[in-house]
Length: 216
Image (cartoon, helix red, strand yellow):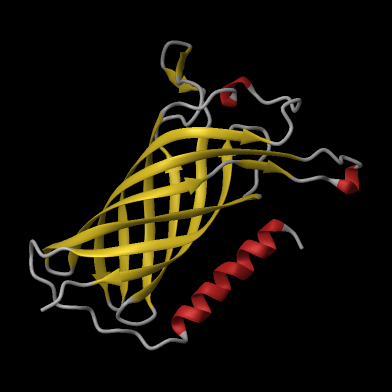
């Protein structure tokens, strides 16, 4: 089964599972009152400009965070997560290409998100501060573009996602991640005005979140 089909099946499963459960009522929280959460999930990723393409690299993520209301149906949330991103080349047997390759950078992520309730869903958007830890490569002899030779210590990315409640304490989450600053390499001016260069993390995270509300 191809990777795109697996991703589609996973997304459908998450959606059906979430929609088949009883939606919880949105909890009533006061401004300045903090709630906590822990989250675990899988990351499907690719690296833009690595000449491979496709969400073929699967990894994991684990972390937690806190959130507090800042307005009507609007929350501010901060997390600290461990995440695996990267790129993977699958063999192309139809063209007699049996070369496989996997590049896996590991990060500590600190996303800061605004979360807005719309009906029974909670949409989120914000910025992610990614701090590179180390990377693993399965085949050091595989020729990579120069843009992904070394990962930068810091990566600023945009996050966009949605929470779907299973019940009051459990949520499913789908989150998109895309680098704003290069994850590897540097931007350069070309012909005096065009900015080109660098490689960018592009990932989709599916997670299960456990929420902890303050006691009355």
